[in-house]
Length: 195
Image (cartoon, rainbow, N blue to C red; front, side):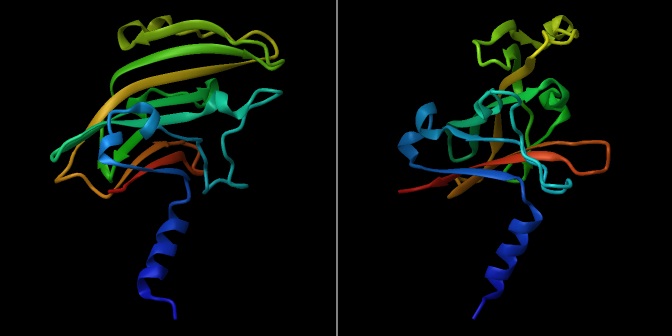
């Protein structure tokens, strides 16, 4: 027999179909980027064909990998780092994204932007600008990348969410709203606490 709880869980998962990456961590892992790193990619479950972020040409999909780590967890607050890598047409600053931690809106601080042109041939990427702070964003390149190259914007920053204790499961959700009415792009990073 299927319980009401199973049905509710199935409905919630189907209604919220962004790509999810999860990792089980312990309290001792918190603050260790290697042990708390979760990597995933943008997806758009409400768009026709349910697209997910993919690279073009011979580029590896990993050039678009987004990642988050838990840097600190206290009884009243959990802090994290976030790295979002997007092709030029998908790039927006963090303050134009909808970012929540366990359903609570969070702001990303100390945002930095690095821009790389990745040749589709698979050669090493060319760094165009590196770790520009908000005050220098006027220097972000506006021209198109070289022919047969893909421009990737990498945004990094950190944030914290107020908590009432450290939850057994923590979810960081990033959503890029799209104004075309066809559905937003988003992703979820999940950490499950183990004893």
